[in-house]
Image (cartoon, rainbow, N blue to C red; front, side, top):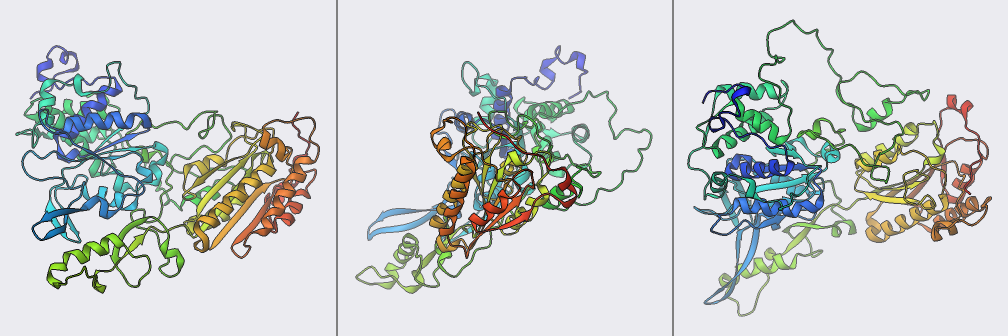
Length: 635
């Protein structure tokens, strides 16, 4: 099929690829149709999609996957509690002549086989919070030609037919494994999605597209990919891009050509595929980097990334002056600015690229597709979410359903009059690891001023990162809080949560409800010790403040400030600090980071004495000559 020049594209629409609509909703429906028609495009990843649109998009996808005159695909939801046994297999009860028997059937990820089978639809509302078992399943199934499943009572080799619809924030793309993200062939930034007046549905697609997408087994003949299409895809993508992105764009162009009943996928289909996922499309007449031209000067090699914490530490010199080393990676802006985080001031800029991981800060866990290390002895092994079963080594934490099922399988062989459970039938639960370490940060934004507290916080963050510690952040004195008389708090699974990096650089406000922040920290610690018990072996409480709390605790509770406060806020903070003495100090360690501000520079030391902790030097020695002087008040 010849390539028409741009001026003839509208004149000869029958011989050209369909013009890509600008409406995001129509683009999304066309992308879902491409995934339905081609099993190689089984993964669809939507960045920054509003949670209220997950269900409508899933319904449209299920309608495209099902036969118009037959059953539709039933969505399967995967989340943080998904485990192997619930995804790959499922037990069923069967009534037979001799009684009830157990049987193992393929789980929802495998679906039915044979002609006319409807592909299953897997929906992941938040890819960043998907369990390790779910991530491994996605890596194994997405885009694979064949999958081999070996579970207890099931052994199956088949071609995966399931389609995956996942949603992820662009800010969380840096936390996910590239092996997982590369498996999603279709990626669309969907931050500005709005439902049309007639609702989101496949009605805007041509009738031929609907027939091809819903046909059992897909189209009989798929379009071929020409050499010109391969060259065009290389022009559209970066020269150093991976092979998976190149193959994904070629497959998407092939799907568009197939839906348009064209025999070959041409460069015009490649341009339409790029516009479909949001890639910029240069004019064919433009000269690209691959064209002949003057030689470019050599570029100095970029040193390897030293890691998240070392990179954050290197951004600040010892004298407190911010310096940025020469690098080709985009650095996250760390200057105080409006609109950072999820506070009323605004939100982080949402990515408009389908490859958000290229722009995100790399904050990935070590071995993200592997379960974290867990102690196998002691009470900690009996806590956590159940993620599977194994043969029992003792009589603790038995999996009763799995044990009864194993025993039921062998009842006929044992020929016993009563239901018999043998030691070989016993199975115990496999539980996800619960955090054994925890970091509680109390950040007083009003003490920072022109001081960058990265160097003071780096040891605590490195300790939490190395130990995979859970995190609790309490913020005091931020200008973006909803109520300046109260402290705010949030919990995170690890220090790699992007909200923690946002919290470190919020602009300072007027009020300092330090007493309320200490109260929230104590409540978080009591809740953690009560929930995890002896499994929580080490906890650090780091308080970064100058001790000058100017909001009484009564004002934080009532939300009303009456008259001058004087030293009441400071005294309430000392009273709240003395209540930490009743906690288990063999596991709880407390450190107060001294902001070294005048006047009242003795307040951090008195606060540390009340908390029963140590004082850590916050500002560097060469910065102490530029301490700010005091006096701030409310009302």
